[in-house]
Each structure stands twice: as structure tokens, then as C-alpha cells.
Length: 186
Ligand code: 5GP
Image 1 (cartoon, helix red, strand yellow):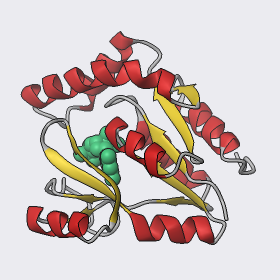
Image 2 (cartoon, helix red, strand yellow; image 1 turned 90 degrees about the horizontal axis):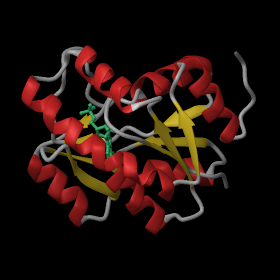
Image 3 (cartoon, helix red, strand yellow; image 1 turned 90 degrees about the vertical axis):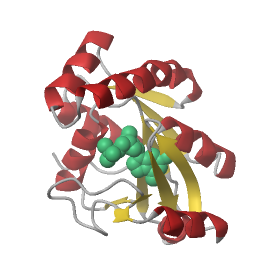
């Protein structure tokens, strides 16, 4: 048996970048592959980045109890964590990590209060805006939508066990891996 770690934080704070850093340096960390109704972005592979599913398939997964948590993110698409693979990792003593939104983190806390909840915070609000705009993957309308979400999400920091401030990606990744009790290989 091992402990599940949940990483959440506002949009564009760099959860994906920190995760990518951990993937490179710590292959012993197991990343959950979420289901989503969002269409794939260029380069995204089904079953690797997400399980890309239809609305009907997502409904079926909920009905069959296959999702540990699920949420509509940014008022648009649905995302959810598959319960089975996460439980297998916990039972097998692995190092499972969920990178999910705040609503999902709250649901996991209800279901698994023993998990470790980590909040990734930006150095400042201005820096968060800069990162979101600079990423350039979203339309202006989508950016506004995500910033509105981020404002609310920043207030949730106090609900988490620990905060990591993402000033530097490698440092933030190292802090998270330390918190997970994994040896640092950097
Ligand atoms: P993106 O569409 O940019 O890949 O992800 C948008 C947001 O969805 C990110 O903030 C990410 O953390 C969140 N997300 C990804 N997978 C899940 C999931 O399984 N559950 C929940 N609740 N949020 C997720």
C-alpha cells in the first residue's frame, strides 16, 4: 500500500510543465491518464495524454462507477480520473500522482482523505496572467474563461496540505518528489 498524491492549482500555473519534469527525472512516479470529452490538441495521443471519449462514453463511465472524481473544467469539457488504475497503483505500493483541477481534488479528498494534497501556486497573479497569455494555445475568449477560473482557484490554497510555489520548474518538481518520499535523482 502507498499514498496517492494529488497536485492541483490554478490554470496555467505550470502543473503540466512540472509534471513533464517529473516524468523525465522520475520514471517511478505513475501518472494517471484521465478521461476527457475535450478533443485532442495536435500531438496528443489517445491513451497517453488522455483517454479521449464521447459524452455518452463519459456518462457510461460515471454510471458504472469507473471514475474516482470528475468535473467540468473551465465551464466546458469534462475530465475524470479512472478509479481502477489508481487503486492498483496504491495497492501495489507505487507512487501514483494525479494532476487534476480543484473540484476534482475536493472529490478525491472526500473519497481518500489519506491522500497528500499539494497546491501549486504562481509567484504572483501577474506572473500567472503572463504564463496563460504567453502559452498561446487558447483563444482570447478561452483565456478570459480560464483566468476567471484561476481567480477562484487561488483562494483554495488553504484547503491543501502543502503549497509549492512554482518559481522554477526543476525546483518545484524536486519539492514535489521530496514530498512524495522519492529519492531525488537530479
Ligand atoms: P487541458 O485541457 O489543458 O489538458 O486541462 C485542463 C485542466 O483539466 C487542467 O487544469 C487539468 O489539471 C484538469 N484535468 C485534467 N485531467 C483531469 C481529471 O481527470 N479530473 C479533473 N477534475 N481535472 C482534470
